[in-house]
Amino acid sequence: MTTEPAIGGEETLRTAIAAELGRARHRSIALTESVDDSDLTRQHSPLMSPLVWDYAHIGNQEELWLVRDVGGLVPLRSDIDELYDAFQHARADRPALPLLSPDEARAYVRGVREKALDVLDRTRFRGRRLVAGGFAFHMIAQHEQQHAETMLATHQLRMGEPVLHAPAPPSASALPETTEVLIPGGPFTMGTDTDPWALDNERPAHTVFVAPFLLDTTPVTNAAYAEFIEAGGYRRREWWTETGWAHRSRAELRAPLFWESDSDGSWWRRRFGVVEPVPADEPVVHVCAHEAEAYARWRGRRLPTEAEWEKAARHDPIDGRSRRYPWGAAEPTAEHANLGQRHLRPAPVGAYPRGATPAGVHQLVGDVWEWTSSVFRGYPDFAAFPYREYSEVFLDSGYRVLRGGSFGTDTSMGRATFRNWDHPIRRQIFAGFRCARDVSPGEWA
Ligand SMILES: [Fe+2]
Image 1 (cartoon, rainbow, N blue to C red):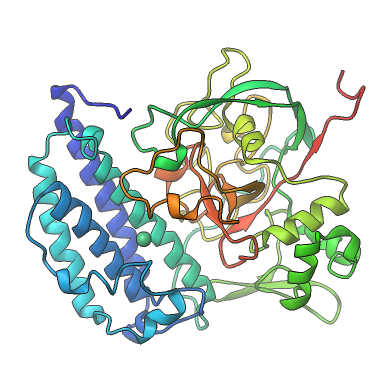
Image 2 (image 1 turned 180 degrees about the vertical axis):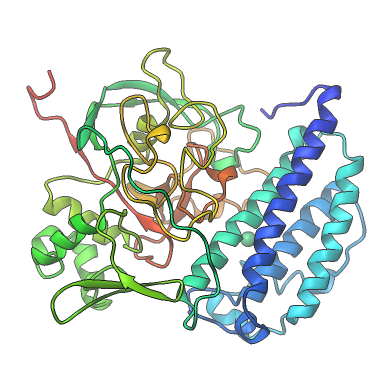
């Protein structure tokens, strides 16, 4: 069920949507204009598309949904649909396609946006489910922001001088009082029926029973992760799952991606072209799910399930309701969470006391995506909307769920129902983790 605005609210919604679309475009332009045309067309990693593909694909999705479907207008460029269909060509093959040049791509996305804004001006946000509550416009703004994060990951893989700049994140102002908290057992409402921005995989709201468990109050830090490496973490098979060990051996994993060790054993990392010592108190980032699981087992812990993560992030034990954000209903600000590429790195643990849950779990949203132990599945009564390729084709296919968003995730995806998924071996995404454990009999009685 999508929310339908009162007639008087239509103009407010229209203005808000235009602002969201503008914010997304501002970011995509910054990510594409910060490099030259050869950098835009080059493939910086076989895992990623050339930046110019992402950019034109953003325009193409906007054309398909807002201009053609919602607006009923004739295509601007139906000849390029196939080139920018993510299901037609693997990322590794995209550089060889006859893609639009950077100038053609810029002109195309500009032309699409002009038409999309005309459509926005005359759309009534009622009736058809695709437009009710502005859904299609929200979806397209989020799609652009999701590709902006993908483009940010491409920037991280790009070699060369730094081209992106941002202030350092806030420093730790209040470390959590304890290293883990008890999340009481019982039912909670997972997912949503009412969030106007929620995508099909976040729906419907349903009750899930979660047994009591203990959750770390912060993500695992670089210092803690370095201890795991020093303890032989990458050499000791007993801490890895069978699949994880096979992957670690094949991929010759030795440390998080982008880390290098000095002769004296100190760790350095490359971050958006800057080589710097690995900061001890930041959440570890660029580890795969197998590394996260090995670390957790070494510490006598495990990864939380997706339901455990969402319960810790949303459930209010006082009124029994599920919140939109760990801190409540307020939209994320710079004081709540490290989102939206405001900074080009995770913030130290303890940097966002205002973003903590009432139980004292910090930084669930922002900084780093958090690997969970759950495979990406549809919620009970899942219904694909508006197209199967958004979520449905990825369900039950071994993708692992990540939660909470990273420093590169836009605030519009900071809601605690948002679900991300990827192959458990992926490390180029801005992913870290936190640990959980079962409650031992007699403990916390
Ligand atoms: Fe896409």
